[in-house]
Length: 561
Ligand code: ATP
Ligand code: MG
Image (cartoon, rainbow, N blue to C red; front, side):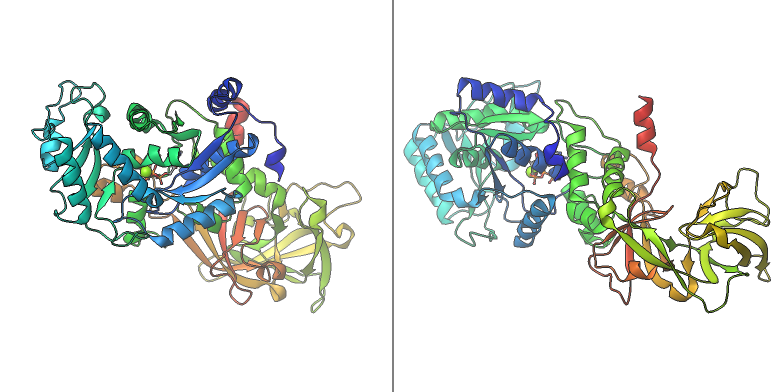
């Protein structure tokens, strides 16, 4: 794989690991994990985290677990577990161990008992509203719960009875006994267990108390022998709690390291909001090509290498920022330019008749499949008297800088001949229906021996060999660069781009294109990158998704800076 040979770019996380290795803090071991909650599909932000964690494991000869953070039974499903595994493998990574936080429910319970016995956890009868009110604010300290000084025996008894299902949801919680006046709100006696009589996707009805994120996460890391627990910046204030639990339990203590989330313009990264798009039918499922999910991008035709390269190119930051989605498009184009097969497709066809070319004759001309890759070989392209060209490639009365076809003008037909327009026909409304031209037989292949130059090169498809295909042109789902900022439903619906999908039902394509396997990627000359839809494309009914346009605004911005 090309990205494996690239020199490693250092970052602050690598520096931390190097220091640990130098001081033998973890005996030179590097063990990471990627910990998704199976409550939705993975998106490009997760891809960033996957590339980071699995990439570090690869570069340090370490390990990386896949751990499903399945502590909230109400939102989690096996279908998401399956999709997440598929997406990670598609990205090109393989985990060392597949783990589930729910595998540790018994151990977590034992740990909780241990803290209760040390007087470091208690059962609280306050309601969630009361707990919130007692917590205080950033400016004011909290108040101790009246239940905070229950005896160890009473707490052990109540915890056991919480576990056996004696109490209804919300009536009791187990809390860590830390400091209600800590300047860090996370240390004000955080909740460890809540009562929830809900069926879990793996443990079924065994449990009716479920651990909170902070109570499950660090202990899971510790149980797995994780050395570096990489998470996003919003968990920075949770680190003291992460360490408090591990220190009080006297178990292996990994190093939590925070980095900035990936944010992209025009892109939503919240699973909750993405789920809303799916549930309300605004998109066609989690793998809709407009979705920022890995499954959606795969279906759109994005390559795993493009995602990995992009992830590498944004680097690892210590403060939050928003990356221009154009930088992602650049990575997509850069990879597809090297790998996609070139072919011709006419999106909005009109007829071009080569008047001096014999009727009934077919010539099989040659086209290179990829000028960037000789091994992609060549293909035969049928040429005939009647061709399709783009409506936009002909003008009756063009301005000076128009280098395409117009009466009296000469252009190159890609891989074929120079042709000069002789005349055209229109329908009753004045719309051009057919353009006529003569060809120069000496320019076969699209080159002239006499050094005569033409400025324009058009793509085309022979009428009798053309296959009709459906082409789906995708655009951003949102018409604002920061869709994550929409605060309520009204704001959210208002920023939806109504033109994010345009379907062209009758695009004329070369026969080889129609015959390709689902998932094959092309550059349609002068049009962009397209991918045969992995769900719906067939030779009988070809369907292509636009992966990216050819426009290259990011490259320009980069050169300027
Ligand atoms: P959401 O809030 O949308 O549900 P999440 O962060 O809760 O997302 P998880 O499934 O908990 O989703 O995330 C798994 C891992 O991926 C975590 O380690 C998380 O930090 C990381 N991650 C999630 N979103 C991003 C992002 N935008 N950039 C980088 N890493 C991310
Ligand atoms: Mg989460």
